[in-house]
Image 1 (cartoon, rainbow, N blue to C red):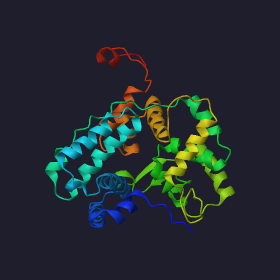
Image 2 (cartoon, rainbow, N blue to C red; image 1 turned 135 degrees about the vertical axis):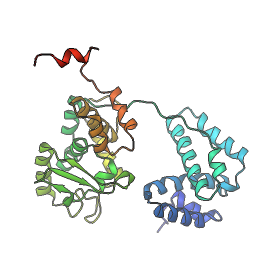
Image 3 (tube, helix red, strand yellow; image 1 turned 120 degrees about the horizontal axis):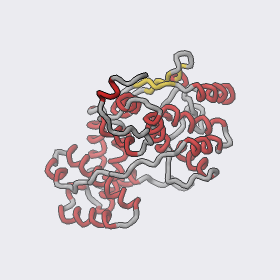
Image 4 (cartoon, rainbow, N blue to C red; image 1 turned 90 degrees about the horizontal axis):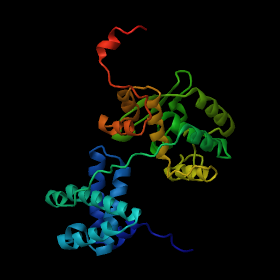
Length: 298
């Protein structure tokens, strides 16, 4: 029987001197600081990549070598490579700070903030998307994400007990920034969820994966979205997270206060939520004096 193909991190653990200790220390620090393991996994993979490319740990790579390496990533015209450059910088910054090389972390390239506006699905497109999946389970997944503005990881971690049909709320536990929150449970999604639960009988997790005791993965959720899009006429470049963007934008258009939307999305600052002001189609109110509306007849 052939050996399973090693992951990039596993390869680094086996071939790079000192990587195993680095892996252990950074993982411990990540857990003790209350940061998510997904953050650790994302960054340690980048550290493994550059360590394998140079056959040594990042602190043993000279500044000139590092600059040339990052320049090659940045000069690529393809978007995925641009993302590789960005995440490599984040990974190295994370790494250098954890091993006490703060100056090297500071000297890494400064990344300009992404100013692209989110792509929003309109209501007709959403109705078309939700009808596309053959399986009721997939239909409910996509509709639930939009109905509550959920992140992919939040859907994966949802348990059946987190959905309170009587109180009409969904309890999102320990999401980004290690926060819990309650979001309203849609009346329409309640109907679909109850049908799905009666049909599938999931165990513990609201959406089970391939095995009964496993939850649905983020990659699996993204696949459901991609397959559904193939069956629609939607031409926009969207992904699973676009449902969350659409949720926030449509709430804003429906008149929900932006501060309330910030709390529903669990954004760290109101500035993050305000991006939706640029894509929402809000009613135009011409400039006027509030004194005139003070005495206006109702």
